[in-house]
Length: 164
Image 1: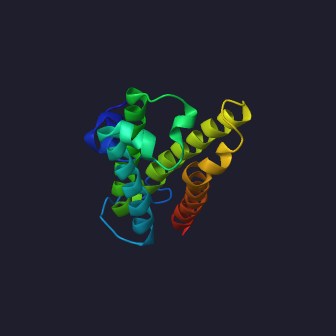
Image 2 (image 1 turned 135 degrees about the horizontal axis):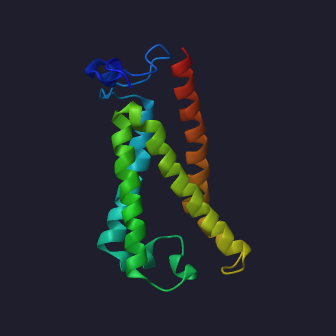
């Protein structure tokens, strides 16, 4: 290394400064994606709080027949509640800070899709009855599919903004 490469100027300059401009603004904004993130984020947070505060009540009163998947397990329900809380808070943050939307929305979508895959495996493996597909449809499959579609739209919009 030479003296120039160790200077403060060299260390603080970005190597890609001549390439496409990168979004660096953490400015708080509000748009239609704010509404989408707020709805999904708030749903996650409310579900998480229910799971963390009253796991037995959640287990027996969620309208998706959770007991069909096994006995009540407080620890497991609270673990999932923690994940819902993290993804929900992340989406609430992403709603107002566009620079964080794609990664935070993608993490939420990945969780929903992986959760859906677990439910598909449970049905396909015969661990639960095929009729559980219809029980899980509104609370597991539809949210995963909607989030996946929205995630693709969000990623494409973000890529289009970068190329402009």
